[in-house]
Amino acid sequence: MAAIVIASRNEHKVEEIRKLLTGLAVEVLSLKEFPNAPEVEEDGDTFQANALRKARVISRFTGLAALADDSGLEVDCLRGKPGVRSARFAGEHASDAENNKKLLAYLAGVPREHRTAQFRSVIALVSPKGAERLVEGVCRGVIIEEERGSGGFGYDPLFLVPHLGKTFAELSMEEKNKISHRGRALQQVVPIIREWLEQGLL
Ligand code: IMP
Image 1 (cartoon, protein in one colour):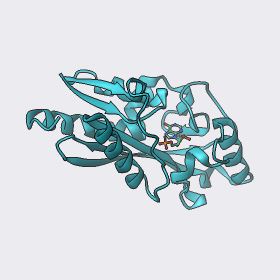
Image 2 (image 1 turned 90 degrees about the vertical axis):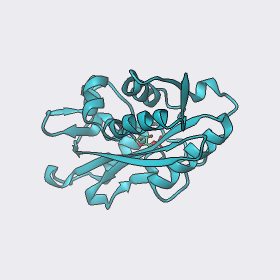
Image 3 (image 1 turned 180 degrees about the horizontal axis):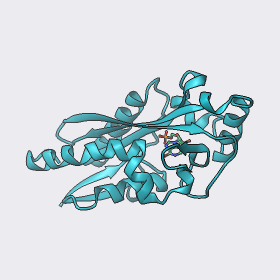
Image 4 (image 1 turned 135 degrees about the vertical axis):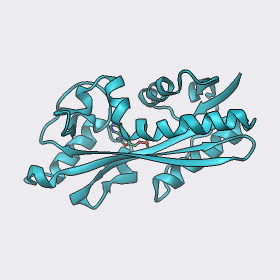
């Protein structure tokens, strides 16, 4: 069976992606199966550059198709911050709690109507035969004043989806996948993988 490697060490993400790709005739592997895979610096200026670099390196290393996601939170009144620096907002090895604390400090005193934000996910797909594709998904929301919910990861407890009245951390994985930035980007991945399977590019 054809295979695709998810170029991520974040088990939450791998699990989310695996769920969305079930039903396709491809074996979904992760970097767990490739412990010696190189670390890829995410120091590009854009989600696109980071995702493409990761997917290219992992495809070359494994000889298989690779899928890499680069994602982050863009807060409107912070002119898109933390953006590509979302994981390292509070420092190089910052924890989710530290990043969330810093975000709340930046937004202290900002009223609800100005706390709008979006999660953005860019996914790069690289085939061992040289084909490359980029897709993107966005989910809009509001940064609330204190954490709510215990699911998910990262900024999830602070990200309220207004039409659901719930934060990402209060949604089940299935509910989150339906509307999330990564879910929306991944929905576009499924037809590309089908196309590549038909064309023998995997
Ligand atoms: P990367 O895409 O692995 O570089 O990480 C991006 C960072 O953005 C994560 O470490 C989180 O801080 C944040 N992030 C990306 N997607 C999500 C999400 O679905 N929920 C919460 N935080 C996220």
